[in-house]
Image (cartoon, rainbow, N blue to C red):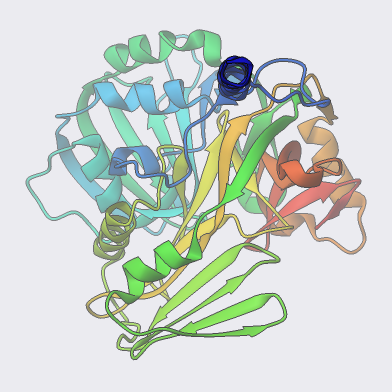
Amino acid sequence: MFRETAKSVILFVLVITSAVLTYMVWSYQPEFSQVDTSVESTPNIGGGETVSFKNVMRAYQLIWVDGSDVRGTIEEDAVVGVREFLEGTEIQDINVYSNMNRLDPAVGEDGHEKFLIVDYPSEMPAKSLFQVLGFTYDGALPDYSFDRIIVDIASENVTFFMLNESLDKVAVANTDIESEYLLSIVERYEDSFEDYTGIITNQQTSNNKTAIYGPNDPGEVNVENFLSTQHSVDVVNDILFMDDEISTTRNEDVYVYEGESNIATYSSDTYSYSYTNLDETLSSGRNPHHTIQRSFDFLNSHTALANEHILFDYEEESNESIYRFTMNGYVVFSGEMQNTISVKYGNNAVYEYERPQLHIDANVPGDQTKELTTLENVRYQIALNEELDLQKVSKITIGYDMGFAESQTELNLLEFTPEWFVKYDGEWMRFDEGGLY
């Protein structure tokens, strides 16, 4: 009798203990010494989203010039929002000139120039832009690439002046958009604009239409922190290699995966995955617009992109499309790890594909900031550096430098530090204490 009662008591205690422990496990929340508030979710990078081409084909800044008043913004709501009201616009005519004298926006009744500047990180095909904007044109669009648009809003109707990166050609497109209408759209986003300034680095950037623009004095900018995990290499291999048998070899931190007609590598040091289709060859002379479209369709079908990605560069010689992630409107760079997605398209299919295997999970709120110097001081320090040639500077912007936080330990904590970035002799580099790295 006593033995049965004891068994019942012990069993009851075990059940209660199990219930308590289960509740504690389910309700447990880890405490991080580096975190002041709760961890917040953030959009996945290539986490299964279907992305619109309109999202990735976008500018990185919008500048509003009204006489001597110059303001600009990087906020996506403004940069993308303005163009959403232009769909259905008719291009009345478009011509390409090898003479910058054609860059001649009108002057308003008050004697002031009034125009918008739309800056892209590198040259983009005009055909891709007009597709995104939903413009119509009865004729054949020219095979022309640009990286800046001057939008004349002083005339009755809007005219687009599309400048190439070398600043030796301009395409002039007259439209049926009423300037007053476009200006009313821009004014809706007026609170997004801040003081901008233009700087001169060479003879070609010596006027207010070709100058290099950026925030005048950005001051304190927040440092962002995110938890991270790694994408599965096996999953990516299964998708790309399909039914091929894969052999795997390893050389220190680099893994090599070989199939019958495919080869891929993965570096656990830089988190870089690179794939090559051995059955393909690079084509030459392909239309950039079509190549970008095919590369985008490939990435979208492989859920490699997120809405925060931007088509950052296109290398016509190698048919290579390069995408970068953006955060808070700033483009993300990294000298520590792979952080671009790139596709080289061959004759009929993808030739090479490179992507990061690092996945951004959740924001870790904090109050750390970094004070950035003025744009004019960036120009001044580059001019003073005897190892640099100021004339080779073609763009300057603020971006994030991504790397592991020094105190990240087992949390894989990524730190996004705001920095000035300079496009120097065709290459984007981080500005630091007068040097470029």
